Length: 156
Image (tube, rainbow, N blue to C red; front, side):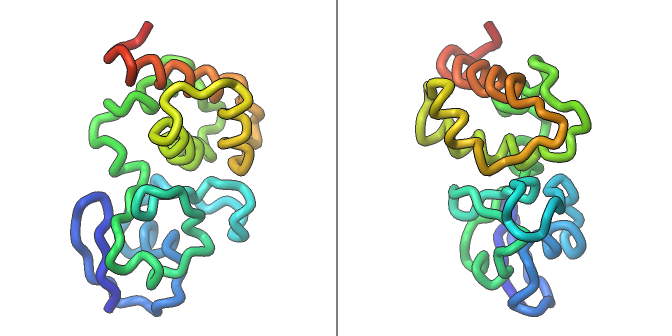
């Protein structure tokens, strides 16, 4: 049994310790917001937070998450009230939407570390997350909007 804390809830999962965290989240816990993209940590679709840091859950053994706080897109907010989620909707970011949970999770770490990033800082921080549809300009606009929302408490 591996003991996990996911989205502030405790779990004990009966899986092999080398099982990728992604599959434990999706298949064992039913948290399907985190997506499988490439399986090699190259695309970012599977990005979650492990003790507040963005990690690729497709290559992270579940044992590495034992005793740490895992946050998935479902744990960012229960009602889409997180500024990034609201900004993503306001800017109509998703096209196919497949990469968006990973994009949002990466952006959350960026905004925690840099509450007012410039375009180049956004591009650098988000460079490991691939959007097959190419909505990078909308992603950047949404991150700027979320930063303003966090600073002012609303959409402007």
